[in-house]
Image (cartoon, rainbow over all chains, first blue to last red; front, top):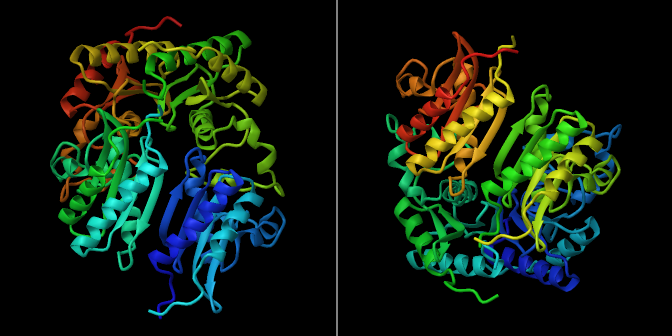
Length: 139
Length: 139
Length: 139
Length: 139
């Protein structure tokens, strides 16, 4: 069984996140990447801000690179904190919430990044995507 | 009526391109951007090469920036030709086929970029996406 | 009717901003971009600092990318605040005042970025440019 | 007498280039920079391709950096030629025609870069800008 998620699975994650964004009335940029941080699917909803094309992808990639959700990085990247400057490494990372790991039986298979709302909204929509990842895979 | 395509329209373009890629048996990276070159939707099919995550997006953006399909650039960017060196401008462009404009009644509303197969395959799949753009819009 | 502003409109915005800068005696860099963040007109007044060639353009582009005036970003990008680190995304953004949206009937058609004075001066000059955008267009 | 051109002079250069572009019916991006390669004025005419926002500025800056018109670089930057790879230095240069020096009594005071047409058209429009530089200055 390959470690990384398939396109079909990524589409399921994206669809669930998009449905949540519609439910809360906040247009979003939603990116799903594989276990190497490479983009699999992306959608920008009508009226979602353009800056988040980049930020949503960076959030997903950051989660993969750090093997952590991005909200775990906020505190430790502040001025004076241990990882101050982390964002300028690895081609550019993001240290605020909205990037979450997609895992199956303890293995990271990808990540989702959501951006365009408040950080709390971004995290709510990302979590809806995470919950939609099929938990088993036969092939 | 806004000049740029909507998410729903971009999804229709992506779906048609993906169907064509499946039909010819070549996994692809497919990107659709708006009339300013900003990504709207993207999908990487299973087994499509990762390098094309970037190339497909650049092809779509190049078509917007040049207001031309990218295959029109191949000849004029060769060593000795008029625009040799074009690819290193504007944040990085692509000068081989697979990027095509999405137009409606003469107005550019977006672009599609396809990458991972031969250039001929990329162009065939992109053309399928172009053909799927709804020609009228009521809203 | 295209969504984005024309060169003639951008020139009117630039002229009004420049007149205000002369009135307050502060040489400025003034950039006007379209609704995709692409530069339309620019002027650097004699004795205006060179660093603002870049900053004024980034302010205009940031307003487009965030769909907000740049002064709205100051608070939320401070250390400890929600979007700390925003400036390092999307090719480089600016989070202090002087970038403002150009809108017509609720649609963003472009943005102006002004830089070289104090932030208050930059905002005053940008606002003069915003006020000069023709509100209707016949063609 | 300062070596660099003034805003007023740059505006005269831009206006003449723009008039020539209108005369030949080719919408252009026109950039005028000072003797340090820093942008002074810029205009993108309606329907001019977006890629040339960057290319026109690079042409002007390249002319300053090399102290040569950019068409002088085409031959010497080809594969196998002496300066192959020049374009990747100094933040990115351009080696095709359309960038020309603005000089007064043997001193370089700035440069003009024009892009969006054929190279021959770009050079014709740039030359019109060069011809419009006031030859004397009293202040």
